Every structure is written in structure tokens, then in C-alpha cells.
Amino acid sequence: MTITGAALAGGAGPGSAEHRGTDHRGTEHRGTESTRAPAPVHKHHGNRAKAERTAFSDQEIVEGFLKTAFGAEYHLAGRVDRIRKYSGPVRVFAEGARHDRKEQIATIVADIAARVQHLDIAMAPTAGAANVTVNLVRDRDLHRTLAASYGAERAREIRSSLDPQCLSGFRKNEAYEIEHSDVILTVDTGDFIFLDCAYEELLQSLGPINDTDQVPWTMFNDNVQMGYFDVFDQYIMNILYHPLIRPGMTVPEVKALLPEVLADVRRFVARINKLPQ
Image (cartoon, rainbow, N blue to C red):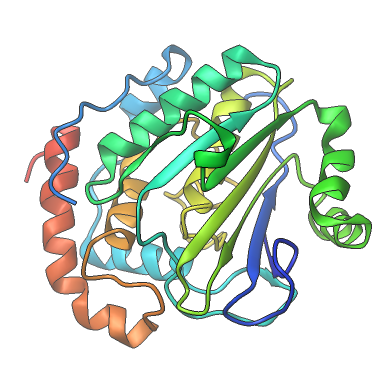
């Protein structure tokens, strides 16, 4: 689920902030061309990755991209039907006491870097060098963290709308370039739930913030849990970060470019995942 508003920066409109949260409670029922090798799939998720669907039509990919990259599910500051993305390097810093979770965040960031061709993303050495901050908190401290991050009134709005277990949001400028993202993750869940939440929130903090229940192959569907960077969402992220897709573009502008962009993206995703072309 998604919130759009001004919790990270005052004011509505283009220079505002957008947020989304997910409740993952429960058990496990649920550039230039990159030469970096993908990070290994977590051992608990190998069977899920092997069983995933990897063949999609152009129409399925395009519909999935448009549904996740535009708009937002719940808005505090009006609908935004424009591309939002980083236009420069992305640097991630994880804050919190759990060193094992920090290592998992670093592995996820490396995996994203390897699987999104034109996205320069890596861990930052310090919080001051980061434009994506991951706040690792205990579940019992989540609501206190929301209040500290967004203020008591906005935290109440978030809790009443989403009751999230993890949350992400970003601040964008008037050109719809993302300037800073914040991700809040609870650390005292099982590995599958933590990885599922971390992948989803980190990826959505990069731009595709809209959740949808109309696309059954994406982790941006709250009814779908994966715990790894699936092929369908690699298509979405590679389209978003293709050099031809620019911040602020409208749906018609993007649609005009998608035939050329999708051809490039298909070649890269097939190569990096060793898929038939």
C-alpha cells in the first residue's frame, strides 16, 4: 500500500514526498552495461526462484510497468502520474544494531546493482554519504520510529491507513527527480519475511511506488511474497532506469518510447538471468 504526501518535506505537489507501507506479518505463507555478477539467491528461497515464471509477453510487461510506475494507491497530496526516479548515483546506508540484517541489506543492494543495467547503486560508508537511509528497528519500536520520522499526526495517519510492518518513501524535487529515500524495516521477523519486505521497500524507494493487485507476477502486489529479485520486477526496474525514460515523463511520453526501451531491456534481462531470447 502507498501513501503520497509531504511527510518528508513540507508542501504538496511535485516537490513533495511519497510513502508506502506493507504489513508482512505472519509466517512464510507468504550507465553502461553492467558486468557485475548477480548476488546469490538466499538458500531459503532457491526453490521459489527456480519455480518462478520467467516468460512474459510485451503487453504483460508494459501493463505491469505502467501500473507500478505511475500514480500511488493512497494519496495525501493528490495523484502523481509522472515518472519518478533517481537521476544520479544511489548510495544506501543501513542504521541499526543488527549486523546480520545490515549484511543482508548489503547483499540485496549488490543484487539490485547487478540486475538493473543503468542504475548506479551501492552501499555508502556513512549516513552523510547516503541518499537512501534504511532504518532497522524492532517491531515494538516501529510506531515510535514512525512518530519520530514523520511527526505524531502523520504517523497516526499512516498507522490508521496502513498499519505497516515496513515502510518506504522518497522526497522528490519539482522535476520529479528523487532526492532522498527512507526505508523502515522491522528486524525481528524470520529471514523470508525480512528479505521479502527489504527487497520490496528498497525497490519501491527507487521510484515504482504504486502497489497493485492487478498484476500477479510482481512483488509490488501485497498478495505476493518472494524474498528475492524476481524476473518480472527486473523488467520493471530496467525500464524505469533506462536512459530514455526520464523523470517527469507522462504516460503518453513513456508509451511512445517503450518499443525501443523494452527491446533493450529484454536483451539485458535475458542475458543476466540466462534466459532464452
